[in-house]
Image (cartoon, rainbow, N blue to C red; front, side):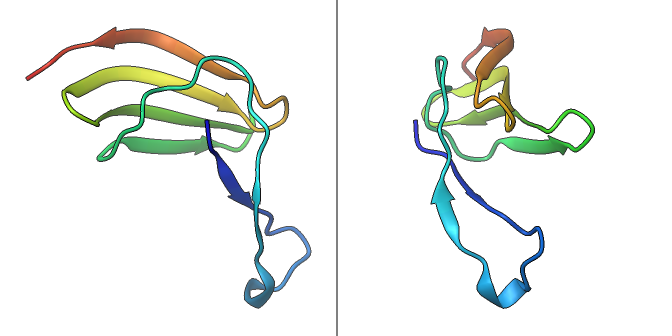
Length: 79
């Protein structure tokens, strides 16, 4: 899995740098047209749905603190 992130803390916008983020667990399939949310209080990214072929109806969490990827309510359907 390839995840990328940028650190905004204590850096001016002009000096953002991308760096790889370590991740563990089973990653979701490659996709586009998904919804992505960030939950600041839990420090998690949540991905819902999308398509990389058939449309998916699944939810994935990525914990930015631990690097763990977890499937939530993993159900897929095709349209």
